[in-house]
Picture 1 (tube, rainbow, N blue to C red):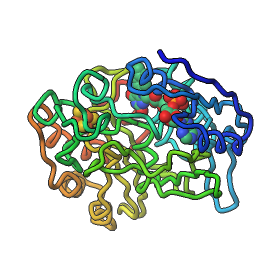
Picture 2 (cartoon, rainbow, N blue to C red):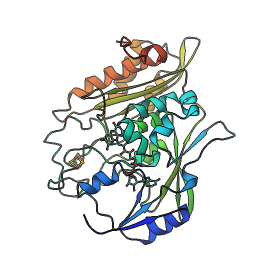
Picture 3 (cartoon, rainbow, N blue to C red):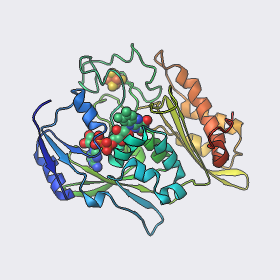
Picture 4 (cartoon, rainbow, N blue to C red):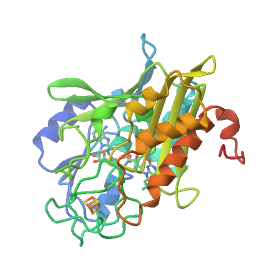
Length: 340
Ligand SMILES: Cc1cc2nc3c(=O)[nH]c(=O)nc-3n(C[C@H](O)[C@H](O)[C@H](O)COP(=O)(O)OP(=O)(O)OC[C@H]3O[C@@H](n4cnc5c(N)ncnc54)[C@H](O)[C@@H]3O)c2cc1C
Ligand code: SF4
């Protein structure tokens, strides 16, 4: 490990001045991803700016328009178990609790979760080429071992997936990310936050290097009546998603009035197809309609060998999760019979 400077910062202005002025500096939140990357020799910051004492990033409050603000430094556990989140945004609670382990969720923060790096095995091996880590060096996953990789939104440069569970829930809820730079604050729509690899797989999101995530805003509609999060993985706990689905439905008089379906584990960002959600409006919430929506969402998917199975499995997961959302209490009870 290289020598490095450690700064403990107590206000966001100071944090922003330091990140702008000190070359090769990094914010430290829970450290659950950053320290791993450091140990794997994938980054070597000269200065670590510890932001854990920024009080304004640990607040949460309901706003006049009915939305809910969650500070970037609240831990994933604090967020999942917050009474307002449990009551109004249970889809977010479920997606967070499907991820990592209790210990990691106690340290991992909301801001860090948004910025976690892919779990592509080649990315984590500094001895191998990887366009995301070392642009222009190649992508061994395309011809190699790619069971966990993307089937949608890929490029010739990179087929990695974004591994977060929490962000799949946030995508379905159409959260907004609040960020701050030296020139002030701005809001980023969730769908505009993470990016596809295209020609620049080294870029994961639209946050500038000298900006701080200050919080997440959850809009009023929380889909608390009809929601479900389904995570398919190789082990039943402590494993990243092969495929995950977050569904929120609004039903009236037996018809769907609003639908949100977001997928994780299949692309470089949480995946939504608005045409499929629009197709469901004023339709009956039945298997046939959910199957049509699933075909629309997975349209154009391409496998790379080991991950071909994800194409059919994603469609089944969407249908199953939408049916589970019709009765969240029963379908998510431990030991409940699957909807399909
Ligand atoms: C063994 C293991 C299993 C896991 N399993 C899952 C899983 O199943 N599902 C899942 O979703 N996640 C999983 N995770 C990932 C975990 O959720 C992330 O590591 C965590 O959310 C990162 O948050 P952190 O606060 O520790 O971030 P850190 O590691 O402190 O930071 C991560 C990055 O974000 C930057 N950063 C942090 N906060 C801010 C901010 N406010 N503004 C600007 N930049 C910031 C840091 O500089 C760094 O670049 C797992 C992690 C581990 C180690
Ligand atoms: S898929 Fe992306 S992260 Fe993985 S080896 Fe290829 S370029 Fe690197």
